[in-house]
Amino acid sequence: MSGSTEEVVRLVKQARELVWKAIELADAPGLRKALEDADMMLHWSLWHLAAEEGLAPEVERKTVRS
Amino acid sequence: MKSLTAQFWNEYWETMPRKELERVHLRRIRWLIKYAYENSKLYHKKYHEAGVKPDDVRTMDDFVKKVPFVTKDDILAAQAESPPFGGALACEYDDVLHVFQTSGTTGAPLRIPFTHYDTIKYGEDWVYGFWAVGIRPSDSFYFAFGWGMYVGFWSCYWGVRRLGAKVISGGGVSTEDRIRQMQALKPTVLVATPTYALYIAETCRKMGVDPRSLGLKYFYGAGEPGPTALPKLREELESSFGVKAYELYGVAEVGAIAPACPTQIGVHLNESNYHCLVVDPETGELVSEGERGENVVTSFAQLAQPVIKYRTKDVVEWHYSEPCECGRTWVLYKGSVLGRTDYVVKIRGINVYQTAVENIVRSVPGTSPHLEMHIRLDERGMDDMLVRVEADPSVPRDSYKDLSERIAEELRAAIGVRLDVEVVPPGTLPRYELKAKKMFDHRPKERRLPSGV
Image (cartoon, rainbow over the protein chains, first blue to last red):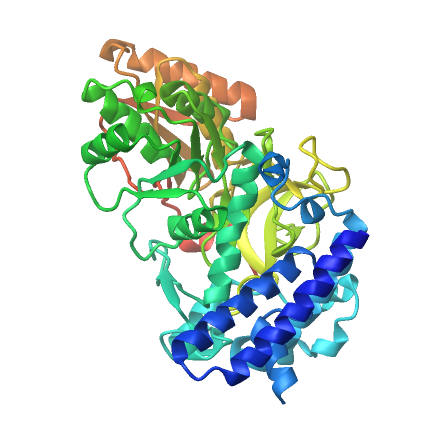
């Protein structure tokens, strides 16, 4: 993995943490779904770099919440 | 935009060295087995009976030797216990966002559930092939597809959305109306089963329309042996429409597993979403690189109804040690799918494959693309095959006997066995919008070859 790829991975993981915080605060179902979809796409971008930490994004979200 | 000139959709994955691929595969396999064991009654029971716990799978060798195969019958049985999905389901029912099923022509239909994320991954499988052959977001796709419960081109649609190209849905209209839609909207990519694409070309000619005037640049097919498996079919598609013709190898309940290779010599397993083993269909033992066997696939992309070491019954020839000419390190299935384990016929000691017969028959001048293969028993009770093929309209009827002799001789010279051949007039055999039914097995059930443990 090149230096720039590692930087992309770091930024995406950081973005996911922010999105997770937003999901916790989101009340409206439409907003919550949009944020969950955003998290799925961020997970997908990590999958593209073989840098994901599980098979499904909600698994990590649940781990963080518990 | 630099990314539009990139050779690969995802160079990092597509050119990953074999050792690194194996490392990532093992990690994903271990997650998947744990996930399936904890969430799917089918896998829990299967692994319990085999005496395997997720932690027992530490190496690829453990995976190959300890983890049991799963078959379509296993999934069907789990679904039948508690319909619609029973113990095959590994997610909450509410998380299933798409439901499909197989045609059920050889038994009960298999139900195929997907989560939203499954469909993203399934769709993206197609994009690797689109990109490799030169299709870009500026292209437009015409779907000659009826959008029923068959997942085939639904997944292609998900892929086109991932690519960001234009979708033109043919929907459930007549072939003539589809041709008129293409004339009006000028798509650049035709998506259809290969035999239906040939039927579109045939219908164009009947309407007085040159298929080349539709302005297509690519044909991209799936659902049955296509332009990679059948070079003569490729020639027919490419010359009829003036396109480059490619195919994707998919297994409905597993995924769009192997997108096109631009060299047209085969298709590549998408190793970001799948892992494969190729085994002897009778013993279940791994076959060596370059040999033919049954494709056994594990999907990292199907979490609603996991498929782990799944017996596809597809016969493939695999290559993986050296990168392909196209630059990919992914497993190459040379010639795509060569046949089905349940339709391989052993005639006088020789394995006769569906695609081999079809390639030879199509190469004989005077034949049309429409043929059927009937597997039956001869008078001694041995496996035998009758090939029925439509003559080209230019062939006079009094030449059919000579033509059938020529075809039989070509088959004997190429395969080493003599098959019965019957030439029939144009328009005799049925046309299909989806998969063409070409194989008919008339043998008693107990005489068919073993096709999955």
